[in-house]
Image 1 (cartoon, rainbow, N blue to C red):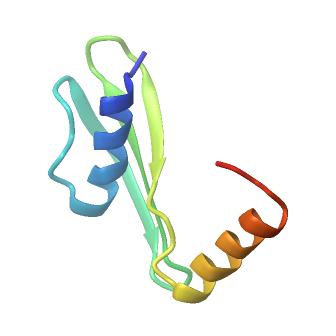
Image 2: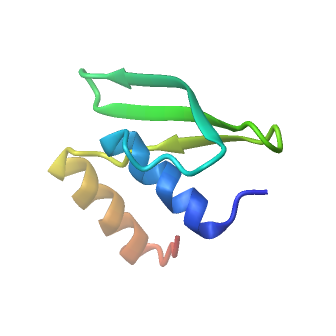
Length: 77
């Protein structure tokens, strides 16, 4: 199972494509310029584990809306 550092590196690699940890390969990348979606699937070649990682929104309105809801409804990630 991936550790916290590997999860963080995989999440970062959705943005910059350079921080993929050792033993992991990027299997698929998908993005949609209309809605800002970005995501990737990674596979650990040693363990066979897969991880799906997403980039968060780059739209300020989405960011404000989601964080407002988190505060108002006490949703703690």
